[in-house]
Length: 239
Image (tube, rainbow, N blue to C red):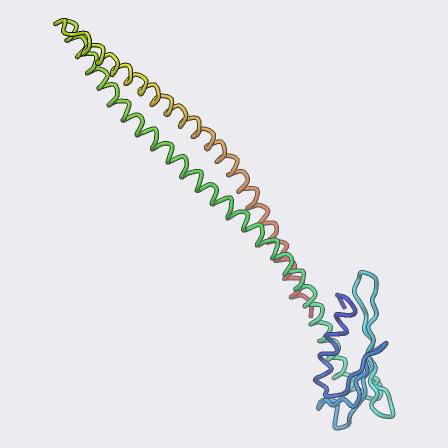
């Protein structure tokens, strides 16, 4: 059997309860006065012992006392087949159960990888949203820059007009200050556009890296899925 001897012993003890006998466990399992219709009308005693075989699993030996004679294939062929099938089927179930534990562990790894891929996909979506936000900032800044240039031109035109008619210096200085303020605002808008472009470039570089990570993670998932599928096939092959 695959698996730990203690685990196999516990599972076999649970199955022996179906035989309605009194079970005791010391160095071996002993089931007293068992009954099984396929074994005939009489009760029988069953002895079982499991032994660990290194890291390879364990073996289980089973003897059946029919009351005056121990079960053997020569003298009790039909009863022997019944007990042989019961032990064999138990072995199949145990080996499948051990392989299922492998499947469970492998599927946990698979789920973890899928979560990591989902996280990367969410990050990519967030990067797209950030890029879209900065593109909108650039659009608004450029629109504001057009308005800013128009206002500056209007101030320049007003300054020229005032200079021609030589009105009071106070009004002229005010217009020049307003134009200077607009020029500063224009530079600030230009700086904002440049900053947003740099941020977009960095985000696009992150998207390229993210894509590579997603492709690598998808390959890991495919490989792990193959591992799970092969282990399931191995489980189904146990008969």
